[in-house]
Length: 513
Image 1 (cartoon, helix red, strand yellow):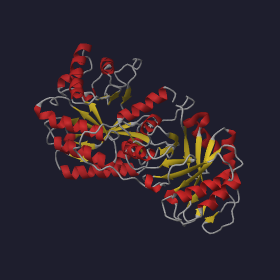
Image 2: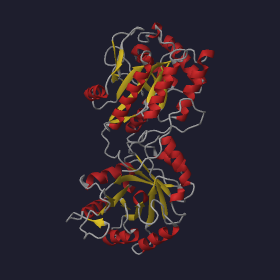
Image 3: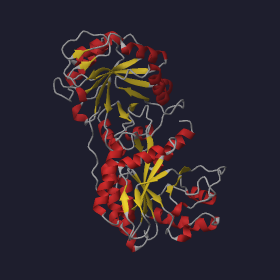
C-alpha cells in the first residue's frame, strides 16, 4: 500500500489557474501506442491470480510491448521481507513457500513477449545483497528490464533517501548480471529523496490520494531533474484514479514507463453525483458549501447550473466562482447546463427545433461568455425528445443527464446520436413535497448503497440532489452529506466520476481502446 500525498485543501473561492482536464483512462488494447514509452501493470506479489490473467492485463494496456512491474521481495508487517520462493531465512529475509511462485509467472510473461521489472521492498535488508539474490535466480530470463527499489520501504542507511554512492553500488551489482539492465527507484516525494541523474537510472513517481491535476504537477517537477522517468497511475484513492498517457507525457515528455495499479481488474460501480439548480441570486452560499464538501471529501460532482442571471450584475460573483472552481478542481467539479431559466416553458418534449435551439443556445452562450464550456446538458423536469438530442449535440454537448422520457415516448431507441445518455439515478434525499415547507432528510449511506446496488450493473448510477434540499437545517444536512460521501468513498465499492470523465470511457470503448 503506497503512502499518501497531501490532499488539496477545500478552498471555496480560488484564483483563476489554467488547468489541464484529466480523465480516467482505459486500456488501449491492440492499438499502436505513441512512441517513446512502455505501458503496463504493477503486481504487488499477488500470485493467487493466474499468470495468464496478469499477462492479458499487461497486454491490454501495453500491447505486445506491455510491461509488468512484479514485486519479488515484499515488505511485511512483521518487519521482514518476504521472498515468494524457497529460501532459508536470514536476517531480514524469510520465506514460507516450498514452491517458486515467481518462476511460473516469469515463464508465462516471457512466453507472451512481455517485459518485466523486478521490484524490491527492502525494509532493513541489505539492498545490494537482495539484488544479487534475485538476479542470480531470475537473471536468465531475457525479458527482464532491471531492478526497481521502492524506497518507501527502505529503512537501511538513511531511510527513504538514496545517495549517489548507493545508486552506484546497486548499479554495480546489477551489471554483474546484465550490462543492459536499468536501475529503477520509486518514491512519492520530490527529487531530493533520489540520487543524481544517471544514464541507467529511471525514477518512478508513485503519488496518490489526490487529484490527477495535482499529481501531474508533482510528477512534472520531479521529471525536470532526470533524463528517464515513469509513473504509477490507477490508484482508487486518486480522483480520477488514472491519468491518460497523453496527459502524463504532456506533463513529462521524458516519460519512459506508465504502470497501472489497482484499477487493473477494477469492477467497481461507476457513480456520478449531480447537484441540481445551482443558480445566481438564490441559495448561492449553500451552493458553495455543497461544492466545497465534495472537494473536501474528494468526491466529484456535476453541478447542474441555470445560466439565467449569470450575465447580470447579481450573477457576476457566481459566474466567477463557478469558472474558478471548475478550473482549479477539474477532476472534482464539472459545470453542466440545466436548461436556461428552468421555468415551465422548458418542457422541451414536443417543442420545435427552433424553439428548443433558441432556449438552449441562449443559456449555452451565457455560460461560454463566463468562461465555461459545458459538455453535459441536464434538461429541466427531465423533459427531452429526439429534437433535444439533435439541438444539444449540435451545440457541442457530449452527455445528456437524467432524461425522464428514456424508454418511453421521448427518445426513440433507433435515434442516431453520439451522446452519452445517463438515465439511471437515485435520489440522495427523501422529501414529502417540493414546496418551501417540504420536510427533507438525507438518506443514510446504507440506504444509498442498497439503491445503487439495485440498479442495472452495466450502467453508471447518478446520485441526484438539489440545493433547496439544504434550505432548512443547513449545517446538520451538510454534515450528513459529508458523512455520506466519506462512507461511500471509503467502502471501496464505487468509482466516482464526473459525467464528462465517464464520457471519455464511452468514447474509448467505442473506438476499441
